[in-house]
View 1 (cartoon, rainbow, N blue to C red):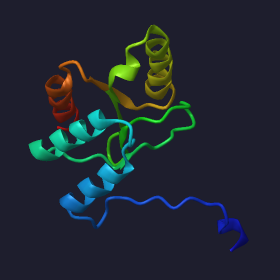
View 2: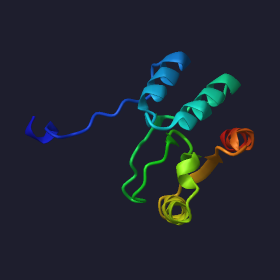
View 3: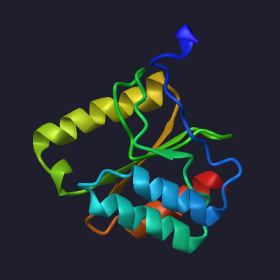
Length: 129
């Protein structure tokens, strides 16, 4: 019991209906990012496989993608709203995402708020197969 103290329980989508999984992911999104919810809703509406989790910190890359697939494929999705427009933020995003891709082995997909949603969803559909 002592070893369990401080451990983190992670919920997975196993056993959830698609609607329940969608609602769970919505609850995990960043409350300050409407664009994350737009992207997730578009995934749901298009019938794409939903991510396994949202806002999962990946310590090996020192970053927290907006959505993550871990079952079968390793995909990290970043929903880039206007806060990602500054040059400093773009530089840090590149470092974080390169670490995630080249150090940890994730496929990284960035979906931008400036017209990138449809293209991003097409890329995701292609990666998921």
